[in-house]
Image (cartoon, rainbow, N blue to C red):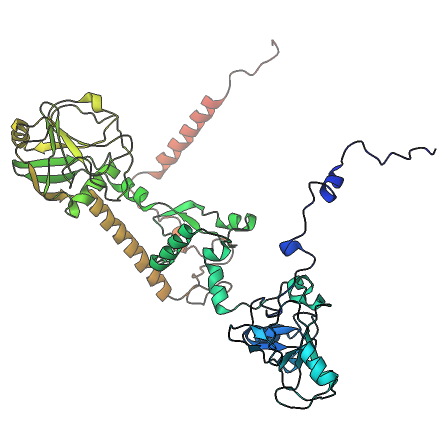
Length: 528
């Protein structure tokens, strides 16, 4: 016995054996099958039942609607891959019975998957091989059985031979192996929809999708206008699109740096330094409000924008609690409605210098952190427990008697005033945000005018020497030739009545004194 004769025999099933021979092996069916037969009455290109059948000299059948665009585009035989033109196609004349099934016009036998079918090339008529064999080949009658047109044995084209079905093998088709196809306009439109990629759906899903495709209208796409940075909103850093374009395949490559644009609100809010003033005209009287636009800018702008578009006009104060506050600003009058000037709620703005101290504090009502909309309240007395919970954005500076009248009105169990308190109108006296917007607009307009005026002037050229008129005048040679002599010459000595001798002596004496003072007494260093 030789050594290692059983080393390949394992005491267990290997993964390869399980995959190829045992439970893991799957039969090759469907698209993975080695042989997939095409029905004889189907087009070899579209795999659909043909309506206008044509064939080649090899008996491969196509539908005219499918084969013509393919030949125009690829100019090859879809089955073999050889060169082919439209002249090689032969028109076929199939005959149907009363039930709409293809049959032999001579024997009236219905064609099926096991019928031997042939066609006569000159006429294109299709018969069963049995009829042609008995009435043409054996009888040596080489005339068409329907038209009596003569033909030869070479003119017989075999469309289907049950003993040789290789030409019906879909997996061997050239256009299938190379994935060659010509899409129609309807197929292109179908590929754009999600329905094209859904393999199977139930009846309910089909109904829902049909209703969706029937009623749905996509919104019009609006192209975003590209904003350009100017001297006011240009940041000191770039947008980063150059780096993103070079490092990410999902971004469009860019080669020029662009300054990032600072949000317009940041620029505007930096310039707001004043208070805002508003008057509330109620059914009980007038309330004059001072808005802290210099401190809580987002909240004040929200209030002023809503006032400007008449949002509060006609609303009511729906909640009033004596010794606490009165609340309004809800157009529905329920305390559950309202929206901000930007539709979405905005964040709280808490300032340590602002507190719910005293009567007449104007503050925002909310339903939790960062849920400010349009509702506000005015306090009847101090409410310090509301600090850091509600944004204070103003105070009452006029009309305290009106606020007292509102507090005296009785309320029901739900704190709703029994007498309706209506906000009839709101008048804006001072709006710092409009002033800032006008200031920015003027600065941009002036900057634009300066740029246009520079463009109108003569452009500066690089590398061109200035003309003689433009060159500065020279006064001498050497260093300082452009400095006028009047600047360098010493001023003329004025005539005086003082004696010059005394002046010189005095200067000599002063110089001698300075020298004696500056001399050092330490002259002998022998004892050191």
